[in-house]
Image (cartoon, rainbow, N blue to C red; front, side, top):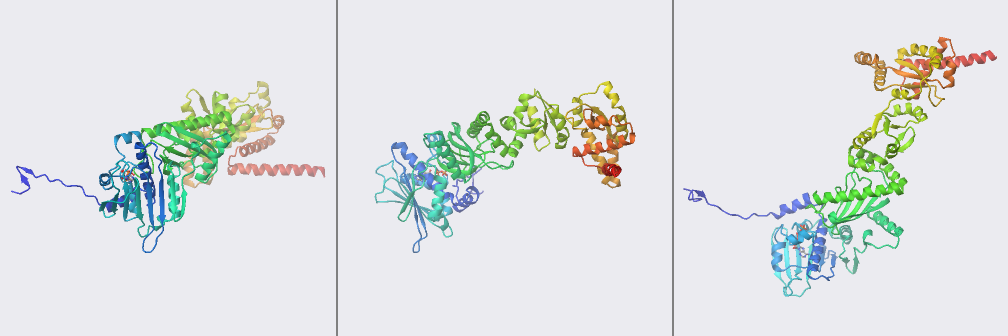
Length: 618
Ligand SMILES: Nc1ncnc2c1ncn2[C@@H]1O[C@H](COP(=O)(O)OP(=O)(O)OP(=O)(O)O)[C@@H](O)[C@H]1O
């Protein structure tokens, strides 16, 4: 019997997990953190947290961090020293917190509930191994007065040494890092200064950077929402200057942000350059004063494409990489509050400075329309402010809704052009929904306002709104209409006569979608080969019987009045043909070969007639 089996069971053996530090460092550097430079953030953050912990036992404690850059000399590589006067560690804590990966002193229940600390995962210090082979920490606890200072030396091979020190040092912690070969670029004064400023410019704990005899406080500028102002102009200037410096671009306006959810405070800046519907805004977000990322996307609702924010959050939860926030209820509540703040700003602007609002919408028109067309919330925010070309001039959708019970629209730009003149003179407001997103916006309008009538109008049903002739007047037009019907029959166009404004317009050519389709099929057939010609024939025949376009004469027009007096059918026919071609051109309809021939003949005959008259004078 095997020695592993005792009383019918396999003997249970217990083992300890082993950690391969090299593998963990590789994971951090290549898959979690965005680059080796984050070690500076992690060290600053540990200093700030340690100061915060010390303040919990000594309320009046004045925290301070010092970062020193020591250049390479003799055989020694450049070195960085990070010093804080925070809580420090005892020997027992050093073993527990520094030497155990994933262990953190900041994860006790009270600290988490109160959200005291930035760190929480117990891995940040390992990021130092991305740039150095060894971390040397000298620390002394402020909690236990008699406890000696401790020296801890952690190595990237996974071993560490601890030594109690005899020298007297004040409570706090000092971390020494020597650049690994190839990592010297992260240890220069300029690079360290840039990164410390980048990550820590909002920290309230003073941070000093020194290099040789030179020392400078890095974070002495407070953000605009923490300053006190004597006038609103001064406040405005301060906010805009700050945004300009931070993002290196000019902004039209700013919106102060504050949300209890997430403990967020900051500002949204209104972009002065057009945004693409596909590009989301990237926001600069700090967590307890430490920069989390300047690429955060999920802080605001998707529709807030016209702003870029800078905010500090006290209670949102960072992901382990510290470069974004967890999608949780608190973040959602924060997003709702910030969205409402932006919406309130837009509404205020609509009341007090509608032109400024129009400027914003105009600038970000495509992005706003694309979102409003598919997102009900966005439509509710912006819908009323979106402008449409209408037969009564440019108008916002809000104005259209206020003035008319029915919103009428033409579905293509050409259709709109055909009817614009006539509709305007009839005081009919028709929206041009021929541009991208316009139809979707109107569908969204119907969805959001089910009581509102939204109706598509085409040139054909527009003529129903035109004034009819009396019987007597119809008689006068009889010959013209009969000749026109016969003349235009080959072009599948019927004729009619109505009274309409403007009187300068002799005709309108109207057709609906099916008639247009049949017409398009005829035009294509002229260019297509036999196989396609056969298919298109079938289409054309199907539509031909029912779908006629219409040339509607204007009884009020002087030329038409004269035409009704002409009895010579040949002359009538020619003029009708010319009016037909002219109406097509006015409506931007491409001409078929036959119609082009009509135009040419007509022009030549007119030239001939004019020359003939001149000849008569000779
Ligand atoms: N400057 C310091 N002063 C006092 N304690 C420190 C200092 N730096 C590190 N520590 C201790 O070492 C522990 C581990 O630090 P580390 O940076 O790895 O993780 P963390 O800060 O707890 O969490 P995170 O991984 O989220 O940064 C800390 O929880 C803290 O107890």
